[in-house]
Amino acid sequence: MPEFTTLISGLSFTECPRWRDGRLYISDFYTHRVLSLAMDGTAETIAHVPQQPSGLGFLPDGSLLIVSMRDRKILRRQLDGSLVTHADVSALAPGYLNDMLVDRDGRAWVGNFGFDLMGGAPARTTVLVCVEPDGAAKVVADELGFPNGMIVAETTMNRLTAFNGSAGSLSKRRIWAAFGNPPTATSTDERLAQSAVVPDGICLDAEGHVWVADAAHGRLVRVAEGGRIVEELKTNGLGAFACMLGGHDGRTLFACAAPTYHAAEASANHQAAILMTKVKVPHAGLP
Image (cartoon, rainbow, N blue to C red; front, side, top):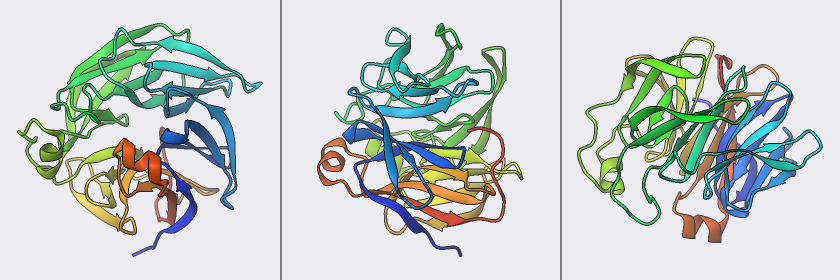
């Protein structure tokens, strides 16, 4: 079994890794920074997002879109480094924004919590929002359980859900992988305890499998359509919250790892890290 090494540590809580042009881009929640990482672990801060950055993705012209979680906006980092508002989806998203996929046409598909996770509110389903390249936004799916990743990883529902997409709309909703029955509890902690896999960030490989960060079980799992786990990698005793395939050959698997996702502890103790290892099958598709 391949072992993880540490690319960088001393971070607060990282999410939404994206590989582009020889560098890994990540959001560090509680320092409010977007970082660009070289393969030697050196980091450059490329944006400060006061309302907490999360999902990342690149427009066709190379501009970076950044989720601003707490005010539920999508920011655009211009090529000169300045930040402008690309879209305000606060009227559509009932909870903090979270993960985001930007497709090849520049559409951004954005998930949100749907409830006050950090405040301990009962879990409930929420919506997926599509933002057009001109900033126009609409709801394209509902009744999703804490959507992460696109294929949608339903973090509180023990499954991955897929759609067909065309021209900013979704159709043919289906369960891509189920790891057991959906949880029945209302509290988030109990729902996670009832889940065999708690899917957070995901990425695709060239054999059509999905690498899934299992947020509750300290591992990355490689999953075939239907839900069969074909490979498992433990993340050195840390929780795994997102993953990305990259490197010069697409075979470096990066993991956003941390001891906790709880805001107070993570923001105070900066024990998150980016781990990496080599795998046999390279990256494919988006992100």
